[in-house]
Image (cartoon, rainbow, N blue to C red; front, side):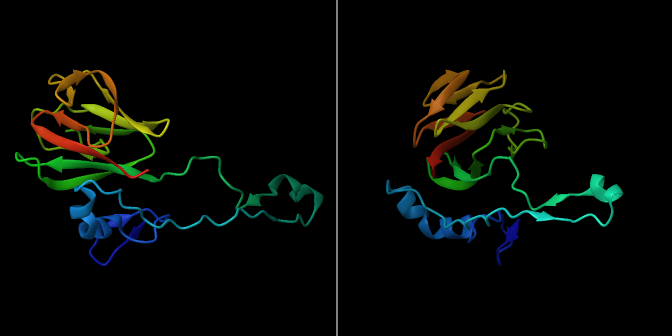
Length: 173
């Protein structure tokens, strides 16, 4: 993880802090223009370094270093934008291309301090290039564009209600 001069932490694959860059672009992003695009570092090509054994008995300890891992890359996919009572953006949470949980519990990826939100209220993940929200059996339901849902594909600018918190989805794909 990197840290910008303002103290924001961001993934190593990004060249600049998306929070600082977003601060300069919020007016145009929410006025309906294209989403902000952040320059991403190209990953270094994997290299293989072989340790040569000194004796035949060392053969079992030969290790391959620097081989590429099969783990998927975590990339910024969009934002969950917190709205005030007038629908004005007040904060945003970065959404990555992995399953992210939302709720009051401190173990969630996005922790909300809203007592009308369940411990693990819902999750958001990317499926086929679209965000999908899944309610986790929450007491106050997950509401998308005014309709309670168990699971729903989220379109750009969809509004989401979790307890008393209102959000807008913003794609960055």
